[in-house]
Image 1 (cartoon, helix red, strand yellow):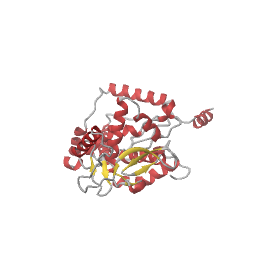
Image 2 (cartoon, helix red, strand yellow):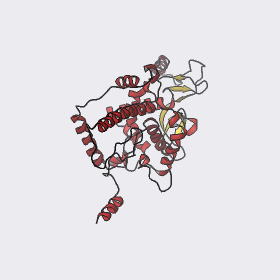
Image 3 (cartoon, helix red, strand yellow):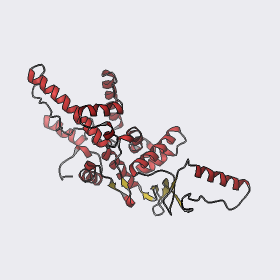
Image 4 (tube, one colour):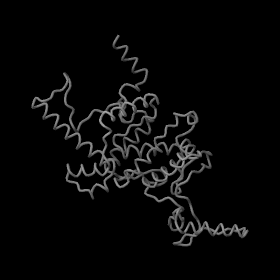
Length: 324
């Protein structure tokens, strides 16, 4: 980021991560290119085919460890592991979301991979079910040497889990393994932000904001939604709406990235609102408050999503001083 200039888009992020994300915006995000990650992994943007599943699963990336006492001394990766190991339905759902999210962004299938031919055997596949049965039968017979899982394609017996938690043998800290690549806590912090900024152009990190302020903000949004009749549109309806207002066909939109679709839908909506409002003002049927101008449909000022509510004490004190 430019020195001395605050970019509200990356407010709250560590400077090194903010600088990295800003570089990715032009190098990868805007062209929907996969982002290079540790160990040769590539982080791919999600498409509209995966919209509902992907959106649901991103909650594993926004868990705020600082909102509970146990998480204060943990890394984000340690806290995620802690949450998935609780004996609750929520923990099972978090594990499922993490698996599906990683499958989407890394273009992999979860299961057991043969290291010889890279064939992946799914956890619910016939081959694995048969193998489990063979092991159980061997145990029932009291056999000391249990059968090894063999790859149905090449017969290899060396296997690795595509997605699993493990321990860093050097630092003795929890790590995440994806396709044999070790993702440490620092890498996971980067992964969280890359995925969210890559797929949601209007995403802002608010993990550092006081929980009470966030709760108040969510209540205000809830009240506003109720005033508007809780009206919402399905993904299908949004896609149809975009085809009506552009030259795109439905079959074109399924392979469009979520990032580009949401940007396009927002711009089309803003353009329509702008034209209606401008026409009303020019015809004299409507007017803007004194001193206020009509914001252009394309050019928007970057604003804090919480307004002045979460500004730091120093900046607030400076404003108070200027008024006295």
